[in-house]
Length: 307
Length: 94
Ligand SMILES: [Fe+2]
Ligand SMILES: [Fe+2]
Image (cartoon, rainbow over all chains, first blue to last red):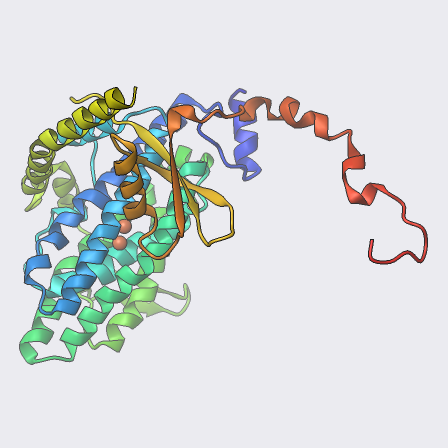
């Protein structure tokens, strides 16, 4: 198959499967995007894991545990999809540790109070869902199927977060202030999760042509904002954007300027928790080495016994 | 870096009586761990009543690139389909 036939298959909405011919750049783009997505799920467990031992009730603790475990699962689904492109999981982890592969920079912000668990579920998972729903139609079969599985599990994540925010917003004045503070800190990084404005996004061209991406960053961001404004109103919290206003003509909310200088600075390693997140992952990986070795030795021994 | 882990394909029977269906894969060093990892990853919400795991290296697949040639022989055997046959007028339950 050549480029032309490949593009015809894409245009006909046919899925590309692991053994199909694909342009080298398509493969590279997918490895970069899927591994970044996988690393985000895995690193994303840290800010929430931070609160498991301090959850305010047994119910809250069980929910948070289940949610964090789901995120581990999402990471595994995505590593699986990525491996079908001919790269090993060991190599993917190495790329993360070497800083060659990135993860969503939202996870480089600290979680300072219990309300942050609410803000993350509501906003961060909420934004992720908008993106992942769109990616269910991505052209690469294993990635699309992974997205379908993930989307099924995500809906409880956003709801549990919104429930936390709603509870706190109608609690004591201190609790309400905590909820508002969490919203203030997570709002802008959440809407920047969709990536740079499309006019400044160099890779969008091929990704759209190959139908890896199905909707533009700005389109997805707008969708998220439009659906979230009303949710904030319902629970009596205020989105920290003075330019946020319904635009009758566009039938969408207008919103203020995002701080891309800060965004890129966090992406490039200068966020409050970049070093902590990566160090923790490396430490866990190194400390698990003897377990992996022991498991392998055990498997070998079992084989010897069997033969 | 450690050598690559063994990959196992996971098949799940969603309900007693139904066929096992491919769900994805897991990494594991032996079959017990493969089964436990599969349970943990693919059946956290009552998705299954039985799980099969099999080392990926044992799966043999046809190539989708020559799928046409591979599946072609079935096209000229229309007599394998019930619609091929003409039933006498007035016959029922057949
Ligand atoms: Fe997730
Ligand atoms: Fe999630």
